[in-house]
Length: 570
Image (cartoon, rainbow, N blue to C red; front, side, top):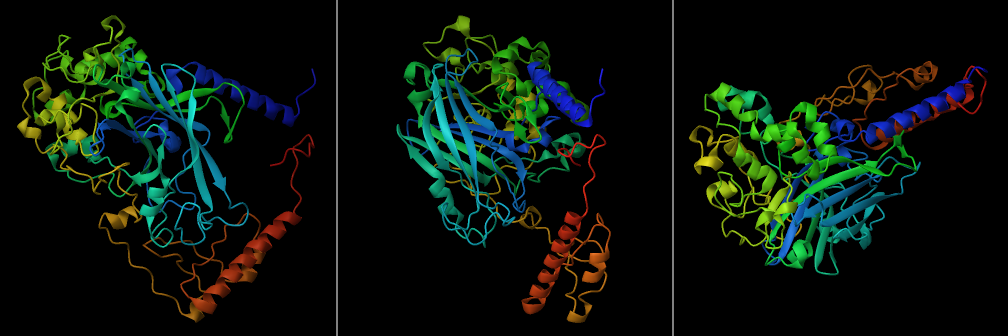
């Protein structure tokens, strides 16, 4: 047998890699990625498809319409340039609605995104001047999307194509009136639908020190909104009740279950996609914080890759609902007795919806699809979904604690932007849903009761994205900058880039030294504090250094592979 060449070995390795990738996804839930504010092991590597939160609520200013808000890309720092935070173009983003309780989508909405990138080899900038409209020539990177829908399992139908995406907010100098950009990206479609896609302030508010032994073991580490100042990528959709209600009749069948997913190409190699294998689900979200505090680490990735209809068939998952970990932790740390198990109250909240038709302890008919008149109980499947009763009137004065405080329009009956879901779930976990009374020892919750930004009164309701660095927005002062050097000190070795306390490496002193540096040596060009002619001179020197190094690299022959195949290079 002839020995393989390096090229053949490389192609074989790629083939095996592709086979393994296909096999990994074929294995299903055990190996796919996950979602929701980086809570699962693999999602940190793929934030563009990381579901962070899902909201579903009756539109407060538009009777007869329901609004869905789904977010991705957690912890988007406003200064995250130059590429910022686009939606993934090799993924599809979904909102799914189950109206008959069989844990399968009866209405499905699907978004696909496309890039329009005018930068090429000319610049690294996202925009090269103030952006005053979505078609401004200064906006060099844009995205558009198509929205498709399917009802009752019918083929998907395109509802809008090439609709504009609101860009990442670069800052006030680049985008002096972001509200105008938001308005231009908000579209009304036939049938009365409203749709928006773009960046927004992260509407979730909570203190994630909950993972530090439940706020330090004595609630001392609470009261800090962990996600304040950060942005997310938002998709918002507003449709009539009857478009998502069973048999198109929200009067007889007002309860729906909602979840959101993201799907990627089954095989992805070096940022490209193969033409085979179709899509695979890599992210899923219904109720908030389920994957963070209910699902154990070993099940997190599996949960996010599986459909809701598999939940009741996963004994380990059902057990974690009926015998949750958090009450045991609270008992060990705060000495608050954990409620007895099995926790049928939590099963109602998270798996079946709240109804008197079961044997659960919550005596109310609120938001189970079993309450729909045209639902067949024999086809009902317990599943983790965010359930919403569309017939509950909009609250005149919403209470952040929702149903626990007597506000039946709030979580867990859907989820409004203002619902304090961490405090609600914490109280539910320690038994408040069973007794109808809040647990006084945890009444303060995490100490974060509202979002850091005001929500809008009209669609898409989310606040405008933040445009200020998180450390500044949170009141932290940047470190003092180093004194500006004089013209005579411009070439002196020392700290460079000492702006906001960040110190660079020691620069090469002169252009001659730079030119003499061996190929591969890291060259740091000083940040120019000077302005005017001196600043331009330094930029010219820096450009000259860069071009000189590029020229020298071009003159050096590249080393071929050992088999002298000139088509494959290092």
